[in-house]
Amino acid sequence: MEPRPRGQSRSARGGARTPKAPREAGSWKEKGNDQVHAWTLVTSQALDTAWRIAKGSVMLAVSFLVAALCYFKRLHLYLGRRLKWWIGYLQRKFKRNLSVEAEVDLLSYCAREWKGETPRAKLMRKAYEELFWRRRIKCVRQVKRDNYDALRSVLFQIFSQGLSFPSWMKEKDIVKLPEKLLFSQGCNWIQQYSFGPEKYTGSNVFGKLRKCVELLKTQWTEFSGIKDYHKRGSMCNILFSNAILEYKLYEALKFIMLYQVTEVYEQMKTKKVIPSLFRLLFSRETSSDPLSFMMNHLNSVGDTCGLEQIDMFILGYSLEVKIKVFRLFKFNSRDFEVCYPEEPLREWPEISLLTENDRHYHIPVF
Image (cartoon, rainbow, N blue to C red; front, side):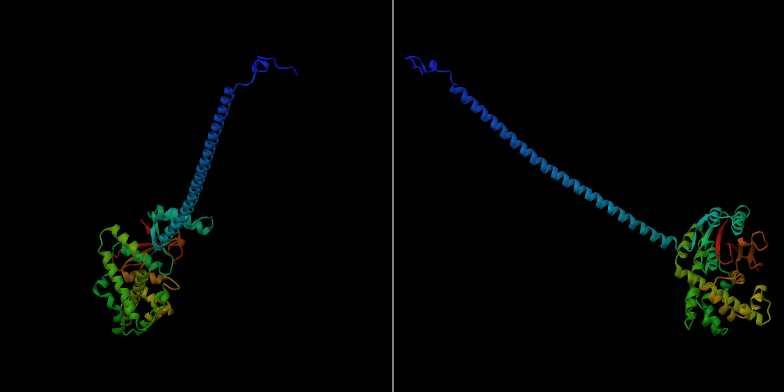
């Protein structure tokens, strides 16, 4: 190695070295980059944390919202089912329990009830068309099918039309008739009277009959005093949806029939002239006197059977109404239209029924 010459500077003797100032600037720059990187990292972490928190909150809110929607949906379905049940219950209680339903179009009812091409269905359709086109009957009111429906059909029309009491009822207090049969005419056998399906007999039968007849008198007086047709109709809807009151009224009608049979029987024993329908009644072995009529026929009404044709005669006679019945199964015969009684003694008011089988009756609307 050569000896370094004298006087030659260190910088001249060797290569150029990096000045100290630029090295210090670079280190500051690196520090600045590190700080920026640190702040960027912190900011990124903060944003990431904030996003996770926000995302978690949003997901929680969405989950809560979905759960709330599912809950309200299930609640809606539950309330809908309960509401539907209550609507059905109220309809069954207040509408379907109406023993005389609202008016429906006659031909629509016929088309619904008598489909098919059987001979009976064809006969019924022709009979209904006869009522619609020639008898001017446009609607029908369906009557509850039980063993009281004939009595129900007649009494409903008496009340809805506001008909007055029969003349003989105006002359007598019908509430006292049960006691009159017992004490004046000695009819002890009336204790065997049966109240339809209840089959009640006993010493208290007079008290029960008295309450039934008193209810009939009260209701009849009230309806006959109402002049407004629509008001009578509304009251009929109320009355004929109360089964307990209805049955008491029908038992009162049965007793009125029994009373008239007893009265006419007493007249027959004194050789007085009696209507021909009662001669026919007493000529039967099963109704030769009032007791046999009650035991063999009247006690079963409302329980196991309804009114027979001869009973319809007695009902019309007792209430002084002309009951016109269209017997649809007798279409194209002389028995298609009959009246009970056939020859009213006076100008009695007329009410109309229709039947498809002589067992169940409906109310035609002209």
